[in-house]
Image 1 (cartoon, rainbow, N blue to C red):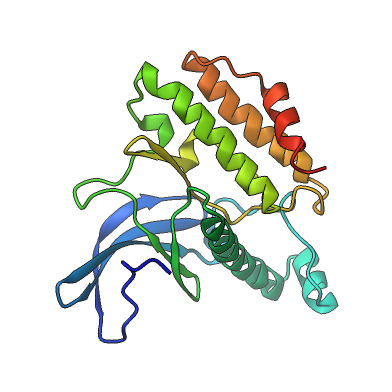
Image 2 (image 1 turned 30 degrees about the vertical axis):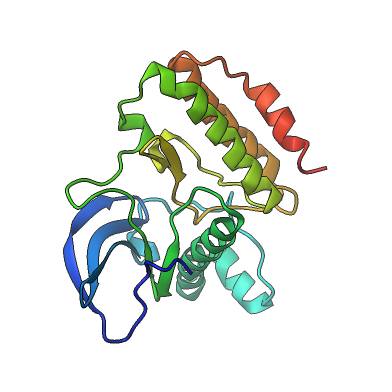
Length: 231
């Protein structure tokens, strides 16, 4: 655990404001205080499954060990949908923990409580780090950002993670560094039947963005290099 994280029960927490709304969750800025110490945290609060705009998660769905739970999920019963909603929260927290420990550029997952994840906040009190799609990127920054992109996806793969929905909308740019966010739909690249197709989607989407910015990026070559870390 990073030494900046406040964990003491005596800490007090305050709502500051909304950071963003999304298809599955809203993200709020909160402050945690203990004496002179202050944590700014991003509280990602998942909506109930029936309230989400993104509900067709069949492509990302993984099998669970409990036959009755699996049947409820497949049938889309109310209990099954509730379990699917909880599974996304659990997946994101678990994957972020594994990736952060490996040194990947992801926010530190501070805490999970019900349908809320408390995450490291990236930005300042005045403004959150911009998404890559909205960030002002200088031409001379692009080669280093491209290298970060490839290095990070390599770390994902050696940790058996495919993001599955990667785009410039869920990558932040902060102080010259890419920070990757939004991991509820991640899959194992080999164990999941859609793993390699989702990896190809992630690589192609990001390469298209770099190409539009003027960086030569052949998605097939990048994908081939990444696949070398799987076999």
